[in-house]
Image 1 (cartoon, rainbow, N blue to C red):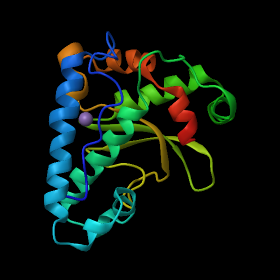
Image 2: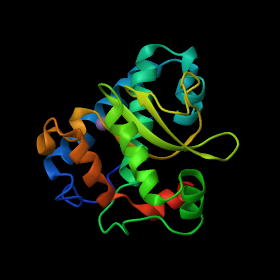
Image 3: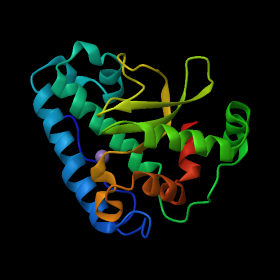
Length: 198
Ligand code: MN3
């Protein structure tokens, strides 16, 4: 099996009260695990078996929809777990903060625009902060399990951070209140990891 479920780098309850332990347990152990299993089944016996998930995403239009959905799911969630964590510093620093200020005016302005992309995504999907081909920071949003690495993405770039706005990411705690989840999510961002990715 070429793809494996990465272990969560903290305990299920580490993100409470913002994201509850039961949601984390189901999200990681059931949802992400299913993407990994289904991706492995979808690439079995094909040349994609020997490729990285990033390489697959970059040429996703050449693959069956099962690879797009489950490969995207695997990439997106693998990133998502690492850019969250307990004891968030609350805001970025250094070069990332400078780049955010340059691109969006201020950190508050960036948060407002990022939340608008997350709340405004109809149905299931993700909102992203990406670095585009010219190195500029851009906010984007993708449907389903698509991501900005994919050749089919409307706005392409390398994901620096992203928020999962599928209902399975927040429904137990927030029900229909996606905006409340998006607001609370800033309390669990692992800025040192986001700065590393940037
Ligand atoms: Mn999810």
